[in-house]
Image (tube, rainbow, N blue to C red; front, top):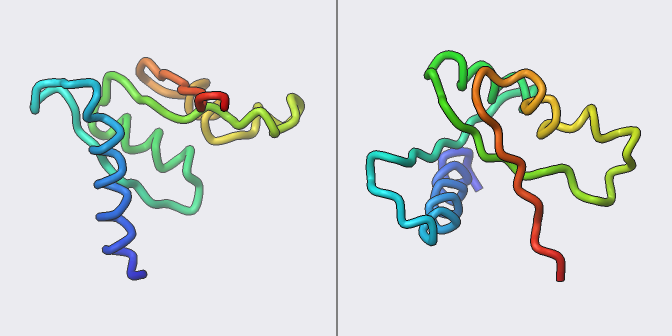
Length: 92
């Protein structure tokens, strides 16, 4: 798949994920951000766009506790200029 197609697919997934929130159109924006360092790309975007809240997936439980500090999610949570919500996957 081309990069453009993948970006569109990810945007569709994000919008589908957000539907149950039932937020008014102006209260939510979804973006697909690319970069060699995902955490730095997210942080740069948040700073440049004065983002007030990031929602990001928490590190999976399979990541050893000693390695969690290096995950994208925790690096973003530690350095973000705004509120960060870490979302854990539903246990099955």
